[in-house]
Image 1 (cartoon, rainbow, N blue to C red):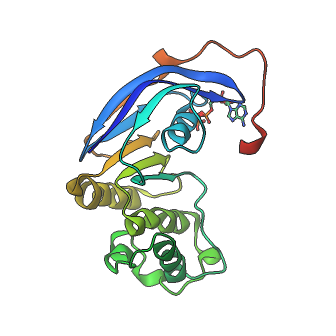
Image 2: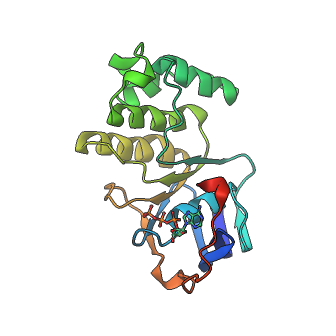
Length: 205
Ligand SMILES: Nc1ncnc2c1ncn2[C@@H]1O[C@H](COP(=O)(O)OP(=O)(O)OP(=O)(O)O)[C@@H](O)[C@H]1O
């Protein structure tokens, strides 16, 4: 299994943001996207995950293998931590693995209403979703936002020991060094010429 991206041009508000991006990520490895704020990391990740169309080019990975995780945690605040994870397990037609609580430091928070969690605890719960749904190709947008150093390590360990060890792939936009072995892709060379139009993509506002 691998992720193959060929000559991909991605857009926001109809205007190209990054032009002609190509790379391959093999099973068991990661690619970290680098570049300043606004270069198009989120736009590229969303396009790779199939959440928005590319202007041109192709993205190839096995069907139904992808999962996207963004800054927004997608947590249901009226449900407990366990109920949130059980919900995602249900949606994906899978069992809730008990190991996920330990892997994401949620053991002591099982019965807490998600709405009462701290920002970092919510982030851990959002990331724990990835441990429940078992998708092989992860598109991660700033996964460590709000996490302290200990939790960053915890997530890096999960990626290494649970995800990459089983042949998983991750494309990660991160301003923080996750401490994992990964290839890097600097996006500045792919930057499209400045857009004078100022178009807006209402659906993503
Ligand atoms: N809804 C939108 N409509 C039009 N343009 C947008 C929209 N959202 C973002 N943009 C623009 O598209 C470009 C790429 O934004 P994107 O969010 O992909 O960057 P990023 O590299 O992820 O930034 P950051 O590091 O700040 O998260 C930016 O210039 C941004 O201003």
